[in-house]
Length: 77
Ligand SMILES: [Zn+2]
Image (cartoon, rainbow, N blue to C red; front, side):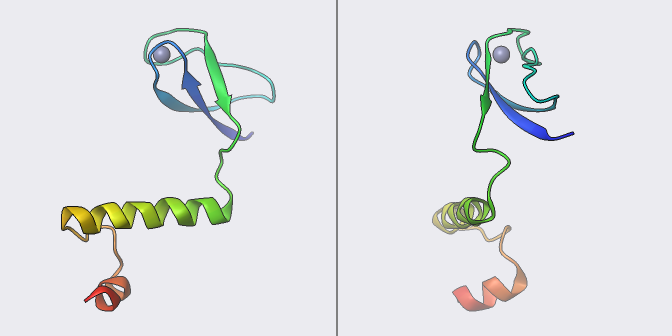
């Protein structure tokens, strides 16, 4: 079964659940039933690359390189 990301409208958190097609789970954080399915997840290949890129940009801004591979570190220097 597919894993979907859900956004809780009550506490504004995002969580992952394995659910059947149109089922909406309750929020595991606050128990609210007002959740929405995030249709953009799971991310398309291009999108996850963008997420990685933005994570690396943030890492560079913050001055650490823990999410770079060795090859990437060599390129950045
Ligand atoms: Zn919630």
